[in-house]
View 1 (cartoon, helix red, strand yellow):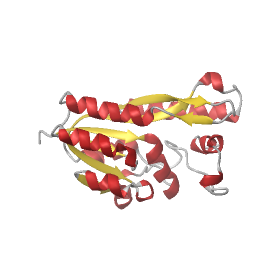
View 2: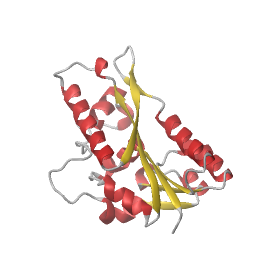
View 3: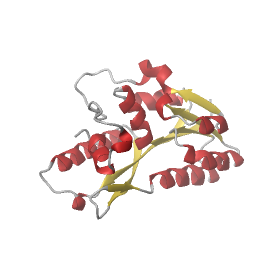
View 4: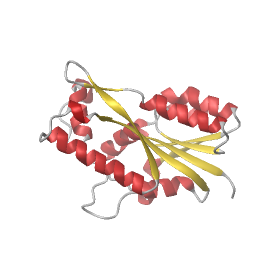
Length: 208
């Protein structure tokens, strides 16, 4: 009953699972489902967004950025702590995502070191977090892993204390209201993701 819980959501990784299933997730429901009646200290959501100076106003990219900002504001109003890094624009015009994984890993480890929680729920399938999980566990904390099958890493699941396959619990986390768009739904894929440049993936991320 006194178990203190923190939830760390890797926004980009989670989105890929959402996109693959073509669903809309209610993040307040997701947090409540993962909480399971435990004491929630805080839920964090990590993502990267472009800087306004890199996008021309009045373009579809600009409108998409504003929608993404509104989405992040909605998460904040739900009580989810949003932490963002900047997408870096390259000379080629493409965008590079950096710092998000490091930001999440640093928070997860530093908060464990400060004894801010007993159990962490890592919502990601990125195997890069394996060493972070093991470091958190070495401090006497439990780590649960929750993600969709499409983005799940076997090696990450193996090191965590518990694994939650979100595909099996869609009835508990999906949005019910039609027309209320929380996460942009992916349009039909055009070609394979391997052939897409980062800019194309960025446009799809924002629903263009």
